[in-house]
Structures are given as structure tokens and as C-alpha cells.
Length: 416
Ligand code: NAI
Image (tube, rainbow, N blue to C red; front, side, top):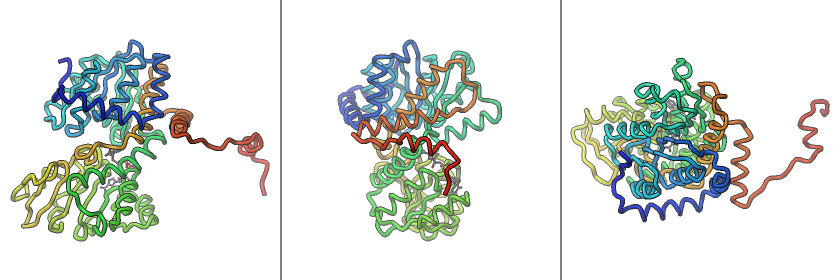
């Protein structure tokens, strides 16, 4: 199979969307210009499982400019932008993705990317690397490095490392400061609400919105929901994060207490069954559920399906369940709502994340054979470099330490 996309006639629209994103991705553009000269990926095959969006297309273009051959599948059955997928095929990239993939196709496509025999992988959620370690072990020998985009993928990789199951070096791009402090916070913060608005068109002002999880993503979502006038409740299992939420001015309580008061629930924990039957049965009539965590298990949709008297698709990506005579609405089938219902993060933040991906791949390939089979983080200079590229592209700059200040910061003798 060379490629599998929905409709090649969508390619012209996809190309325009990719160009629009490119205009906001000035830092990646600078890396791309360097790659065009240096060709750091000459002769390398890169297999990707990332959301197939207009921003990802710009990452693919940068890698191709650097000499790579690329094959890509989606990393979520609902997140592919079909026009972008078609445009990438016309750029001679192998693409296996369409919006609304069956689970069977999802895994068939990941395997198609692995059939391309990659030297390096880029994952968002660790599905490719996990497949290589379970069903496609023959690829382990030639795999130089993997990179991982998201918190959930990094958690899975660290679990593999702990079990001594990880056999290749993988770079946790999510751990770059220029990734999680921007993508997770500003990106998820804005695009999660964008997805919910596209599914429901509700007014946030005056609603009680409960957000499960106060990590980088949850903080972003909570602040944006407050910005739109919602009354925000945060649920947490980590006492420090719960205290942070309290100090940031949000109500903090267990989910069971929040349920009867909540109009809209948003899960963003990276955990499973955060909303489950004991909660569904006590929800208000008309409650809305949305998930922005990586996998579709944060809301126990299976339990809701089984218990509901009926289910009806009432709008694009909005399902109405009838449970105990009350209506409960689920956005985007419980899959990450910003990508299933909207277009994912704005290009400006993906610029930073994908600079991290490009530089992580370059670092891993340059250090071929030198990195242990473990989860690695990039050196701090790489983060500083990405931030600088972005500031440059925005026409911004920082102050510079004076020689006296450099000396002072490196000394201990000078006190009060
Ligand atoms: P994080 O680890 O910084 O925060 C998650 C928080 O959820 C933690 O504070 C944890 O204590 C809390 N938590 C865990 N179980 C909980 C429970 N049962 N109830 C309440 N709180 C609970 O993770 P981060 O970076 O905020 O990511 C969260 C999820 O979002 C991950 O699955 C990540 O992969 C995903 N993600 C999604 C994006 C999107 O585009 N929608 C973008 C970036 C990350």
C-alpha cells in the first residue's frame, strides 16, 4: 500500500491550509531553511504517527527538505484533516490516514508506516514504538531513535523503561519547556474550548464547568474557561496541584461533589474512567461531557453506552444519551475534543512543539549509537534555541547579561 487517504480532490484546499499554517510557524521555517542546506536526514526513512493536521504537514515538509523520506499515519482515529492528508500525498509523502478511521484501519495504517522500515519514529501517544516492541520486533535493530510528543506517550515510555522493555532511545519532546509550557497550556487551553464550542455552540458565561486534572493542559483549560465567564471547579488527585488550583482561585473538590452542580465536564488527566457510571447517574439533565486527554478512556463511554436507554447523534460530533430520563451530551465520541471536533492547537504553538520534534530527531540521528535505550530529554540549550528562534521570528529579543552580572551569578562570596 503506497498511501490511503479519503479523497485526492481535497488536495488544493489542503495545500492552502498548510500555507496558512506555515505563515504562523516562523521558527520552524528557520530550521527548514537550515535543513535545506545541511540535509541532516539524507538517506533516513522517518515513520510518523502524529495527528495529520496542517501544522504536522509543515513538520513533514521540513524533514523532507532535510533529505528524509517520510511515511505518516494518524495517531487518533478522528483527528486527520482529510484535505491535508491528500495534499501530503501529492507532495510524494506516504500517507495512511482519514478522519473517522475504524480501529482496524488505525492499526493497519500504523503497520503500513512500519512496513516502510523506518530508521526513526515520531510518535504522539507511543503507539508506533509500542507496536515495534510487541509485534514488529524485526525493526528494532535498525531503529536509531524515536521521539514522543505527548504526556501520555512519555508516561507509557517511562513504564516501558522501568520494566526494562524499552530497547531504543526515545526523546521526550513533551518535556521541552518550549513544548509543555506552550502547547499543553495555551494550545490545549484554547483549542479544547474551540472544540466544545463547535460541537455545542453553548455560552460559557455563567456555566459551571468542572475540569478534571490541573496539569499543564488543565491549567490552560481552566483559565480560558474562566476568561469566558464560566464558574470553574477543578478536581485533582495530587494535593499540590489541588492547592495550586485553590490558590489560583478555583473551587477544588472531589468529582462526586462537583457532579450535581456541573453543566460541562472536561477531562484532561491522562488517566482512565475519571468520569464513570457513579457520576453519570447523578448528572444534571443536559450535562455536557468532553475529553481533551490523549486517549478516549477518560470518560467511560462504554458504560454510558450500555446504561443509556437511547443514543442519538444530534449535531456533528455531538451525541445525546438518555439516562434515567435525563439527557447527557458527549462531544467527539469522548476522543480528544480539540482535534476530533476542531483543528487542534493553533499553528503558533505547534511551531514550538515541532521545532522540538525536528531538533530532537536531528539530535538522535547525530548521536546514533551513543544514546542508551531509555527516555531522554534534550539539553537545555535546545529549549533556549527554540525560544530564540521563535522570538526572532516575532521580531522580539531579550536583554543580555552584563559581564558583571555573569560573574555575580556564578559566585557565592557576595552577600548582603
Ligand atoms: P499532567 O501530568 O501535567 O497533568 C495531569 C493531571 O491530572 C495531574 O495533575 C494528575 O494528578 C491529574 N489526575 C490524574 N488522575 C486524575 C483523576 N482521576 N482525577 C483528577 N485528576 C487526575 O499532564 P498534561 O500535560 O496536562 O496532559 C494531560 C493529558 O492531555 C495527557 O493525556 C496528555 O497526553 C494530553 N494532551 C492532550 C493534548 C491535546 O491536544 N488535547 C495536548 C497535550 C497533552
